[in-house]
Length: 582
Image (cartoon, rainbow, N blue to C red):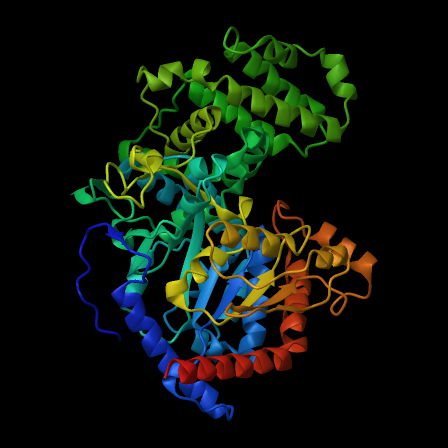
């Protein structure tokens, strides 16, 4: 275990990496030196190259692709070469699960995570317990919390409640992890220097500004660079919600969010019944709240339950009840929904009814400020935890309220911090996939001295967009980046499995598109694979996951020798630089 020193709970303004990260990477490079020696690439510690593995965004496709890639790197004895591992969006989900095991790179943790992803979704009680605890302990309860729980429940299938700073005391057995997000206002204002946000076990902050705070203090309140009020650090469930919240950027996604989060509460009647039975055992009687909000939520629950039922009368009865409950509370559009002619309803197809139910649910959300008034004004005593959480979800969705974090740069006076940033009490961190979609900014900080980047591109569309976006970012900040020929875009529909971009006094980039002409037969198959594994597909089955794993593993297998060759070249470049310096 690395010896830790107390980290001051203050803002650090510097382009250098922090002392604790330096300790970690120095110890890690000692292990990499031993790994190199085992492959007859013996060198001095100063000549050990800094190698970073980057995983792009792409939802579950990226999470599975990252797992498959890491699994094969381990099989090919290449995992020991990595100094840094950096993720965006879906790859951060994968990283979070892996790093829950302090020794993941030396055991079968990849296999365990894959098995979980192919298994059943989370138990509703675990979901509700987490949401209830978050609601009761934090005023900034938001859609980001629901999105984090959605990610944990449907994709990674585990509720990881550790804190990122918990990893700070670990030995350097694993590559140093860097999780990425962006600040939404800075993104919308095209503020290149302030947009990118990195989170590591020791420190979190703005990569471009060189402004950081101890990760354990990330959500705490600062003023003028001084800690005012300490708050509890977010857990990994919420971090996954932040890192995967690309959908937060556009309110037009409201129906999509509603549809996905509703899935968390499907079948909650059994849990409700269990709660009611417990109440009966304690008091000998049970009282079901008859307030309008509770009755509406029960009706919506029944609608979801009957959505696949071929009998149209079941859903019709529920909709009629909703119409009676919500009279005067919804728009004219809503009135039309409730008052559809019964005979017309009977003639609708199952597909049409499912679409109608989605429309009804959206109308309820958009009118929730009106029909939840009794509940908000505390004129009812609804104690059912599920109902309360669902009602809060409705209200948050209506307001499109995603999470914010206390801005540790608030009222700080320093030339490197723009006034627009220092004037904000809150910042909004979201999925970096909407910006560059690959975590180049943190690894290309000059203080990290990265020599070789292995870039795994799991993007849904153009596999070169991440590289060109990263180059634009680095050019604007006047930081070194290898030349990338525009002509490579001509291969976006039929890419090769690996491209090497190198330049003078720049890191070398090995860029690997997920679907390519080596693991697919031709352009048509590449197109089919991209269509099959859409970013916003609900979730993949075991067969789809296994197929995707094999595609990712094939990329690593096919490029093992090229990776080793680039590592040798990186050692030689280091040696040359050292000899020149002397």
